[in-house]
Amino acid sequence: MRFPMVLQLLRQLFKKPHTNKFPTKYIPSSTTRFFADVHDGKKTICSPVETPQGFRGKIQYEKDKCIGCQLCLKVCPSEAIEFKAEEKKIKIYLARCTFCSQCNDVCPVNCLSMSNEFLLADTDKYSKDLIVE
Image (cartoon, rainbow, N blue to C red):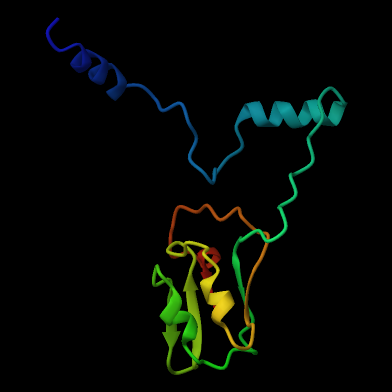
């Protein structure tokens, strides 16, 4: 055959994907069997790995401490921070954030900090879980 990849492409067009979307909307049967085995004592669950010192996870914002100086906007390389002029506060879009921590370093009143939270996957980049206000 002259173009072997065309046959492979046509086969894969009609197959189901081998992966699940994240975050899942249902629990696969393999997972429920695993939890049943854990409950019966046949299997064990490993404890979660602790994040290292200085880990840069989800940004935490203390709105009451913020003075609206806008220094964080000026240093943000990904333009993930938006200034709300009517409130003189900021809004951070975590889908755009590169977690570089420059906004934390420049803040004069330390209203921004990095948490240990790192599970930020979502199908909608504008969901309330990915916007810090």
